[in-house]
Length: 389
Image (tube, rainbow, N blue to C red; front, top):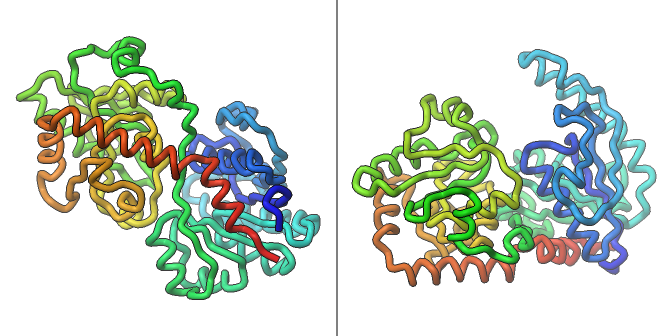
């Protein structure tokens, strides 16, 4: 199949736009595929949206438009109490599959179905054996679900661990590892640290640690309470030290951590990606302090990691296999999550490091992300992978 004429139906049972990261990731993937010459239609659910009647292309800053088809569903998720959410979602899902069954009749033979949902992948392949079906799982499907994928055409795993586990169950399955990516235009042209601080009204003599992103994923905290404690403790010997959490409010921090942030921490709230890039440039160091839970250790490929790399600012990160898929000691400062005081020791070591070493680490990370982890490079990998006959 010629990738320049590949017809792709990207199918997800989600509402668009959504404030969650998966909406941005899906639409950037589709945009990049179209940019590489593919004919893409994004298929989603026609659901009520608390964000209102927003254009998803404008909401996510997508420059290339492509068709979006919204399938009819039984849409009561926003109207029922929390204790009824699970059966209501099940009904919504069944009606999505019913609508998808009708819509799939229009797929041309040898076109491509691409999805993050293993159930959708198995469903479409049963309906249309003449369609090429690929799944990009962001969590490992249960073994019983994986076995139902035996007839699909390939698995694009988000992390090497997911890929290895899929091959354990389906050893003959065509599989690649496909991490997330970054839009380099957000950081080009790069502004200086001093300019970014002036625009954000941050004192030039402060030592700034920045975290960017939501405060939870899949209802799991991201280690921000521990980071807040360490920064507060270290500020006793260096009062210039400050932590800025960009992506949530103090009230959200308190909901997750059970207490208010310390007086050395600023919660900057949600900002657009252009403003987020300024915070990254204004920082002395960018922090990823994910706890050592199964999801963070093995199944995540955080977009913030690639944005951190593209910013040209040094990174400190918990030492997890999912992070090691992309970063090594030449590009970031690692600390052992399981060692008590590991984060404090790593931050202390960073504050004493030679500026030239830190600059070289940041430059190495930026060079790697430019070479391997752009949306364009990801789209080329997808198009090379989804060839089938």
